[in-house]
Length: 197
Ligand SMILES: Cc1cc2nc3c(=O)[nH]c(=O)nc-3n(C[C@H](O)[C@H](O)[C@H](O)COP(=O)(O)O)c2cc1C
Image (tube, rainbow, N blue to C red; front, side):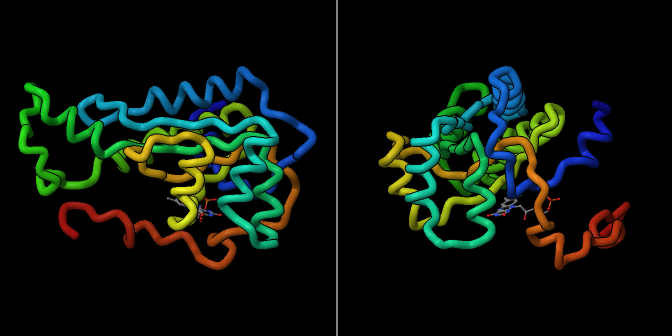
């Protein structure tokens, strides 16, 4: 698929064909795409926990969400969930190394929390790779008060910060959902400033 088409076709998919599993080679390619993403200082402090067994996904949803919304009914049909984690510690450690020299590990040095920036980069690479494999995906967050229980259920170390989850599967026909149904894309001049703001 041409890159421009991958970009154009990418949409968050919130309902999946539950009868079709994600081919192992496609899942592998998507995970490798995330691993190929850039990272500050090549820290590579982003980790992925893949839930592809029904029991794992059931545990995830039991902890992460319990309402009976259309959103949840659709999202529960995803045959794979990739939970995305990052480590602030890993970045503070990396930037304290001799070639970076931030040995004081002072958080005020950071112009932006690169541990989350990098997780966004990795997630976007995975989302685009999903489209390239004719799959659909949706990035969503775990409610903050459920994160400790998710960590405990799946043995995620306490140093790991939850970034979100990528649901993955073949898209099923479904009515449009999500913010673009009631919000327009901003115009180019609202977003892109040239020469001065
Ligand atoms: C950081 C982030 C968090 C998001 N969280 C959710 C979420 O919790 N639930 C959801 O359905 N969509 C979520 N989305 C998807 C956005 O709603 C979606 O990307 C946006 O409305 C634009 O639609 P599109 O991606 O289909 O073009 C999230 C997207 C991002 C980038």
